[in-house]
Length: 500
Ligand code: BES
Ligand code: ZN
Ligand code: ZN
Image 1 (tube, rainbow, N blue to C red):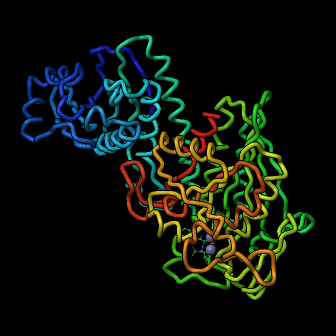
Image 2: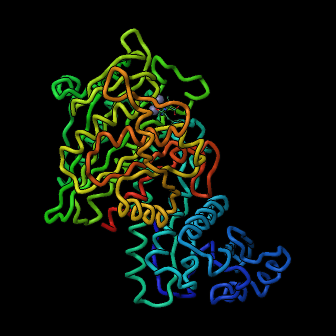
Image 3: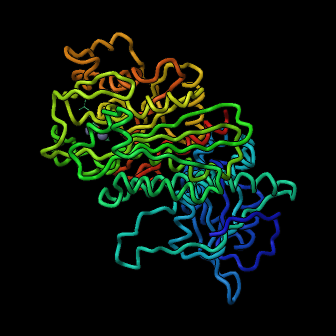
């Protein structure tokens, strides 16, 4: 599907689908009037008959014989009230539209930029949102489906009409940025959807190598294996990995532009499968635990497009890849591990493994002397209990960072909500025999996990995103996030980085 832009021109002969967007109760624009004329007034009749008023995600479509040889489809999509329209509405309606086009096997689509008449957003923002909706809305993870029917049809071209020739440059910038954001998100989705049998720690290393190889030398990496981790004293990741037959790795990516103003570190949780270890999860809680590397997947998604973004920020990506399994060699409740910074942790529940691996990853991250640090982790079921499956928890020791990250998430169409790093709860992590314990009682589990991580970030401005809820959709979330991995966090981080 090639996305392209053209100055409005009625003589597009090969198009077989025409789409126009409408605001609620403000149906008639240039586009809809033109389409109505094309159908000799049929469209207006249908709109009335079907009671199409332009509500968000409402559609009406018409199959029409344009000439003896040419059939076309006409589709009107609703965006809701003009004053309420946002980039997120555009994303969702674009996804709905492309799904309809595919079901009709439409080859050449002509459409407006949805919602552009609203003047609520700039043309490039609108084009970006459209590209994201179109690509994320056509995503599926079908590689393990044997039937060819699953390999669905794609349109060949999608042509956007603009009013003025001068708009084309700005709109193309938006489109290519949107395609980049979608690519990064899809990159992350694919890694998370891959079954754990094919996404071991070593596979994450291989993926990282591929990103570096494709980066025209703008990204470099270091990998630390078990022996090197032992030398570093990374007892957290080594402890968690002890029960697994698969080797653990600490991975460090670096994107270094020539004149960087700031240095940021992204840390991702990278437990390739979380069985719970000796504190074994019940079967039902384990079925989706291939997603426990979704934090690292978002970081890798971001890195997969960094070379094309022309940024002036130095960005480091760090993750401690391992698998959490029970076995005769596994870490057991009561074991004490020593983290790379010398702190000891009493592991009372081997299922609270993410924070133990992140303790090492964050310590290593600090050694890079970052100006700002963000981690993404499918860290706690408690966060899902608190905020549900669509909203990530955000905790931070820095007001500005927290506010900017929230704004970035809003622009990206990802939901995050702040939870407090309540100092009074620190005592819940007190251990009788070590510096800290890895669990903290029944209540406020997302917060106490955040407080545990805070012990390893010192004074660096840091934000923690607990993405346990939104990383994976067990039922469709919206028109561009269906069953499976969402790629959550990827676009928020890209938005944040671009605003730095
Ligand atoms: N990976 C899980 C958290 C999780 C739960 C992610 C649901 C995605 C969906 C994490 O390692 C875990 O098991 N946390 C425990 C912590 C508890 C033992 C303190 C939890 O949340 O139950
Ligand atoms: Zn766990
Ligand atoms: Zn986990």
